[in-house]
Image (cartoon, rainbow, N blue to C red; front, side):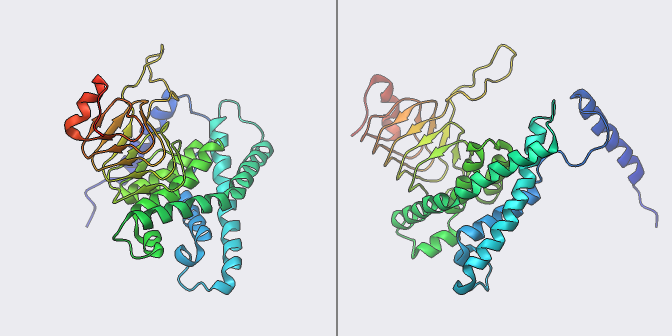
Length: 306
């Protein structure tokens, strides 16, 4: 029985579509290898890094404590070598208009991965504060192990702590891939540029959005469907959105934001403030104040519920 489709015709059509895309962006030229990092490779190395960070919880099922360091060393070696390859791809792509020699790219990628690797103990200690925040903040949590193994907010933060470090080191594409892996698994969307202090807890988590320039202090707690977003997007002279401007909220220490709240723009939620559910907020909130839905509109008049 002959097929009803013509694969060769589809291949020719896809080839033409690719040529059109590349020609429109001046990306034609000699055949080359892969130009961008591989999401599949990044996902695999992130799983390895998670195992190295928490070997007896997120490592292999048959791991024993007496071989823990051997496993961590071997796993890190594999993950970091892979990360260096992916970093080199990102650096080469970023410099594609005038690419430096491969030796120079390799050295730069190696230096970045070395710095990343040296920060992993600090990342682990930060994650310990997040795990404890979830354990202390949720009466349904029976143990810190349950929190680490099961809570989507903790999974999102493991990815974010790794992604943010890559972002700081100048590997924003790799950072975004790491963040989007967590987003697809948890429904929690944290841009890797967001700065988040110790002891951060997202309860339930689905639908949380935290923008690139958000700054979050210590011991902050969010519930599901909270948005820390931008109010407006300035357009430059070229007609495109202006990149990099501070446009997301600043959330100071010990703030609690309940489910469904939307906080937009470069506003500041003062230390210890409580934002009630389903509030739409575009104004600063003084330290220690409580804002609920019926009173949120009064903030424009300088009023807030206490």
